[in-house]
Length: 351
Ligand SMILES: Nc1ncnc2c1ncn2[C@@H]1O[C@H](COP(=O)(O)O)[C@@H](OP(=O)(O)O)[C@H]1O
Ligand SMILES: [Mg+2]
Image (tube, rainbow, N blue to C red):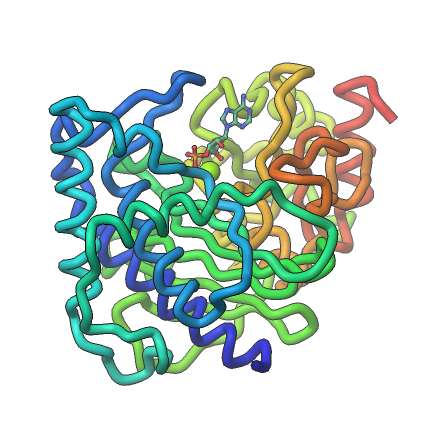
């Protein structure tokens, strides 16, 4: 199967999951959110989107492993809370699966058919692959930016295909991002995608049969770097906002940072809504997760940007479920990435 066909499949499954997420968005009740051992929240939408995407992917690629953020352990507990959550997941996924195939959606996914509870829970657990430098694997973040999802901000459904440890295809759906950035109150919901060597594109999620438009980062030079705008996490625990302010000062950037949850940051700068994305380590021990960066990294690269860590090393997706050989993430247009790295290394006192 060609990467172009795989792209159509990835866009279809991610867009379906984005529809599902949108239907849950803001309607969550407490019983639909649980707190994981590491204290991060996980919602009925995280489980449902992982189930839906893993299930559809396994129709198209029964042998491909999936590295997904969630597992179904909590849904399999014999408590009332777990049962309630599980029933809601099954209902939501089946409601989306039962919608017939629309024009433009990929064939062979058996859309229009509901599934048993066992199939849907097993699909979630297909995401427990440990990662590999060999062969094919999919990398899935069913709801990236769960805190953004809960607070009514940005969130993203993120899927990437990796071959021999390299990202070959990436698709990200942002249900809450304006279709036209100049009309923040206009329609929302955009799907972004990229194939290695073939560019980056976007399309409204709802237009399953609509054209994909090519996107690119703003061209920016050393001379205009002071006019750049940068984005970072809303969560100060995910990226040091004090360090980013000092880096901005070092680059003579005066615009306030744009704070946004999820890989919507990669999407925004890929289409020129901003110029730089800084993710600066808060704790020395945290290892970035591959599903938080795989599709975003390809999207930016295909839109004219460069993505490295704070040591100017490429992100290495071949080492398991985390980027264990990288620290932080620095994203900027190729023409200014070197200058941004210099400022980052000066402020953080690293080389
Ligand atoms: N201490 C930390 N440093 C950096 N990232 C962290 C972190 N703790 C959690 N994260 C990750 O940050 C992601 C959200 O990124 P952002 O801050 O850009 O919105 C979370 O994804 P999920 O929301 O999918 O769990 C989670 O994987
Ligand atoms: Mg995430």
